[in-house]
Every structure is written in structure tokens, then in C-alpha cells.
Image (cartoon, rainbow, N blue to C red; front, side):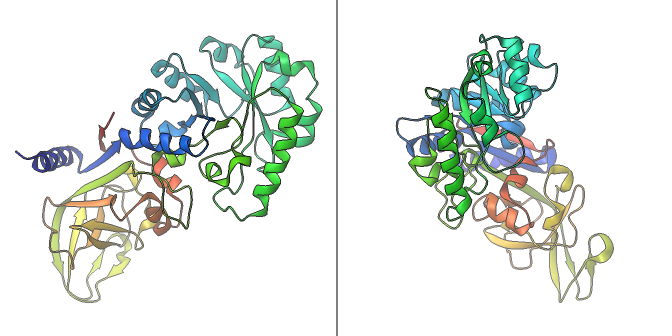
Length: 371
């Protein structure tokens, strides 16, 4: 059997078990990390693997990144960090959402580094760690979510609690890095430069995925990409410099011909304007495919874009495959992949590729390649 035929057989076998298959290319994740690293020669490049590695599976993705050379990782929560520590015993792991009251012993037990975002958190960690355990200092330069406001951070510059807290990284987060012309980028870069200068000798990190492409003033010592690692475009409006990572295929369960005036889906939200051929796919919003894509999104059948009709339901999606001669019972429809990249799928659903990616459900048959 040829390689192509073997791949097709594997896909069909997976689809029979659920009806939809999510394929994750770990080799592409590693290559994307290398491409991002190359944007700032001489600087280190971390990986943000929160939300189960943006829906791609932290247990598979993190070791692939480690094998590629990544040594520093960021997650959002303590539970994510605990799982990551089991996979990567030697990695530097920072927890972005800070230090909850009473959590210091748990961080210490797993050798995790809290990202401290308030004076209270700095004080708590300093009292516990006494300079023996590292942490990061999060400075808010404009997001107004987490982090110390710039004046508070500057006031701590000579405070003995900084040393006692073991601060080994000063960081901030860009508000609009994907829009390089926005004035807030220049302001944040300048404010963070002032903060960094107040903490001489400490490494600094500002650039997220899109920030990597804002130039050297945003790079500092450590890049901190997330979305771009998984194939999202960090440079909207320009060609995507990243390799695609995820592919979502579903099998056609059933086809039917309907006459003009026939309605399809819940509440009869779609009415056939003429004779049409419809196909039903075995996935829905319970699998993370957004209901908001109803009547707006597409799937590819034999390379032909086929519109989603009516309402996406919990387990099923209806397509108009009238113009797709390859459509047939058991044929494969692609919902993410080829011409349907993450960002275009997000736009069609009135959201962003981040939400599409992180919402990928647990019911799919998942396969990993390139790891």
C-alpha cells in the first residue's frame, strides 16, 4: 500500500471511532518555535503552553518543544504547572496567574515559579522563599488585568523584598502587538524599558507571539510566544510565517437531496433556495466547533468550500455539498486545514483563532505526528 493510501486508511479508521479526527503536527510546533527564536538571535525563547497547550495537548507538545531546545515554559494555573512538571522534570516553569493565598508550599514542592503581580504577592513569596526560590515580577504597562502598575514596580526597585522573593525575571504583556501601528505599543515598550532599567541585572520579557515581530526594542532577554507556536498568524494582514499545526477532519454520515423550500436544522433556520444536496457531519459544539459558525462557516470537501447550513448542533453539522462532486457517504470534510486556517475559521465564527484552537474538544480521535 502506498504512503498516501496508508494515510487515508488511518484517517478513515480514526473517523469510524468518533466521526472526527484532530491531527496535531508536533514537528510543526517545534519548527515554529525555531522560527520565532530566529527572529531574535542571541535571545532565549520560551513557550506558553497554557490551556492544554492551546488545545493541542500539553503532554505531547511540551516534550516536543523540550526536544527542540526550549527550556522555559509558561502556564496559567497551578494545576497546569503540576501536569507540566510531571512531563518536564528539569524545565523552568512560570505560573502566569500569580500566587493565590496559601499556595506557596505547593509551588515550592514542585519547583514552580509564580509570576508575582502585586505587592501583596511579592511580600507573601518573599516571606516564604527568603531568597531561596525564584519567581517573576509582572508589571502592568497597560493591560489593567494583572501586574503591578509601573509606579508601584519602580517603587520596589530598591526594596529588599525583591531579593527575598528571588525575582529572576521582570515581565509585562503587550496590549495590541498584532497591530504594530497602534500607539500603545510604543508607549508600552518605553514604559517597560524604564522598569527594566530600574532592575539592572535582571532578565526581562515583553514579547508575546506578535511582539516577536515588533523589532528588537520589544525582544529583551526572553521571548514568550504562545499562539504562533500552534500555527496562528502573529502578523495579521500579512502572510503567516508559521507552519500549520492542527487539522480537523470529519466524515460525512449521510447525504440527502432536498427540494426548494425545504428547511434544515433546529428552528428551520435555513431554507433551500432551490434543489440542494446536503451532507451531515459527525461533530458539533460539544466538540468545540463554535455554534456561532452557523450559517457563516465552511468545510472543504474535495477542496470545494461547502457552507454550513442552519444551526450547528451538539453533535452534528449540516453542509450544502451541491457543488462538491467528491461528497459521498464516508467522504472526508475538512473544517480546519488547507485553505481553512485557524484565523479564517475564527473570523467566520465572529471570533478569533485563539478561541477556535483552545476550544478543541476532548471527544475527537487525536493523532500526533512529527514528535
